[in-house]
Image 1 (cartoon, rainbow, N blue to C red):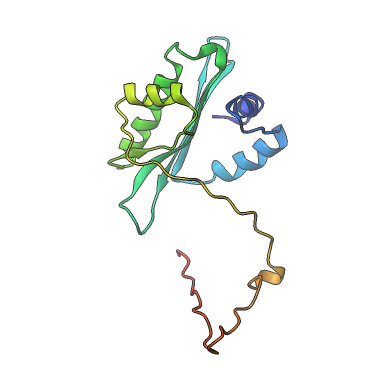
Image 2 (image 1 turned 120 degrees about the horizontal axis):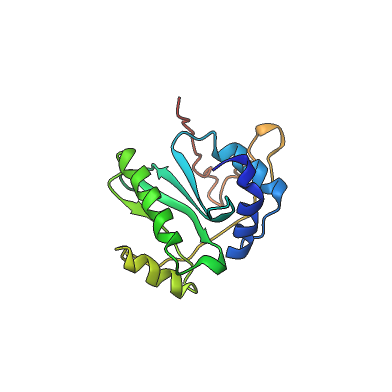
Amino acid sequence: METKDLTAVAALATQLGYPSTLDQLKRRWERVRSEPDRAVFVAERAAGAVIGWVDVHGVHGLSADPYAGIGGLVVDDAWRGHGVGRVLMAAAEQWAREQGYPEMRLRSNVTRHAAHAFYARLGYQVTKQSLAFCKTLTPAAGGEPASEASPDESGTAPPTANTTSPP
């Protein structure tokens, strides 16, 4: 993906149900393209117009061995059913193999039945169903915790979290 693709990528993100302005996409793209363990692929018509994109990245955590994850996949409504999604997923899977990831995972909204059938045709299997939670965080002043922990009714202070950042 290149900076020139951002207007089309924003329109496609909006089509997927995630309204995005060009300014928002520019900010996101600056961060995404600087991440070494991530790739974004676009599908273009012969004339160069973007008709789909996929975002793939490495996922590393304590609960599972590393794997590749799909951060987003969208194909223009007019081009669905023409193999564009299959080409994009093949590019993402190839990137994941080249990075040494043994597995690809993705999430799909429970209402996207056509997408579920598409992923099944590509060999993906449902492994679990879960709920997605979101909480808007307010910035902490001066980098300090937003609130201090208070002792509970027994006078015992609650546990604290120590952080370790990667080098």
